[in-house]
Image (cartoon, rainbow, N blue to C red; front, side):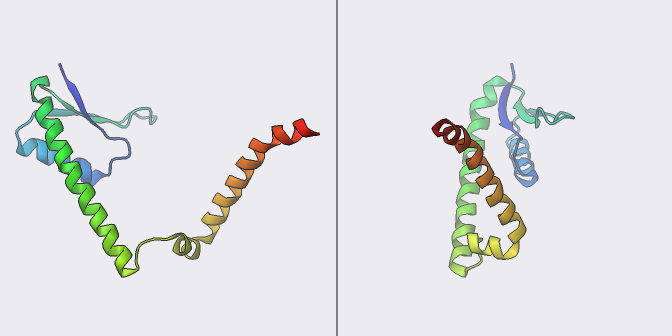
Length: 121
């Protein structure tokens, strides 16, 4: 029986490639299902032999821990350098997007509050 190792939804290509390389390096048999045409499924990496699944999950957990630590270190370095994105830099770099998001949030809050306002009338 097969075992799902990694759903590829929202997984960057470099991360998926590194997971494939790790599995191949450890000689863990796996296969992939492709994403569906209409976006219902994003594809996945499956372990072909269920007895190898615990080792594959351990390898994946170790890899994800290293990747998390690296991302946190890069973000901390960017914060120290002053290059980390902030709300103000986003506003400066893309004011139209910020305005649209704020208007959408205001519209959503207004629609949520509308029944209460109408009830009090």
